[in-house]
Image 1 (cartoon, rainbow, N blue to C red):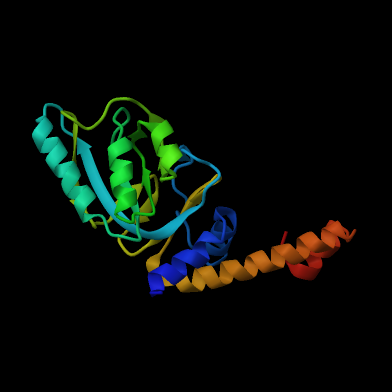
Image 2 (cartoon, rainbow, N blue to C red; image 1 turned 90 degrees about the vertical axis):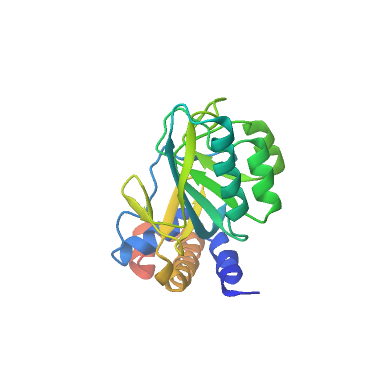
Length: 218
């Protein structure tokens, strides 16, 4: 098992709130993606290294050119990664049925976009974890195209670069700088162990203030 797989497996056992707390306590700001980016299936946790994509609306682009650029992206996305797509659109679906199934078959862990999604029932049924801002039947044909891949992008006030990691769950999505991923996961695991001690203490009748003073966390 390589480092990416090991780190991804450990990160998937965490949750976004604990990861955020860990980052905040170490001075990392601007790590939470916009709160309107929501999951198709809020029972799943998505975690892994990031593959970045950016694109923009191009009214009048030909069907062939739009789909050629889109399928080139589908071919290029890296196995074992989470695709994060900055779409700069408020009315176009940047994920749909065939694309989700293609990415899943190619070993992509999931997809996060500030654009829209369509064919959501199918995507939910195949279990391809997708985070997006809105639903719409309108797709990229004649309207939108990929601009760059594996270049730095931005969502809200969060800078995202290839090599960073992401965890996303029912609460939202958190970006972890790639150079600090092992440190953050280890610290987050310790946070969760301490939280479990606090939980056990509270359930046994310990006063919450006493539990906080003893464990330093609540």
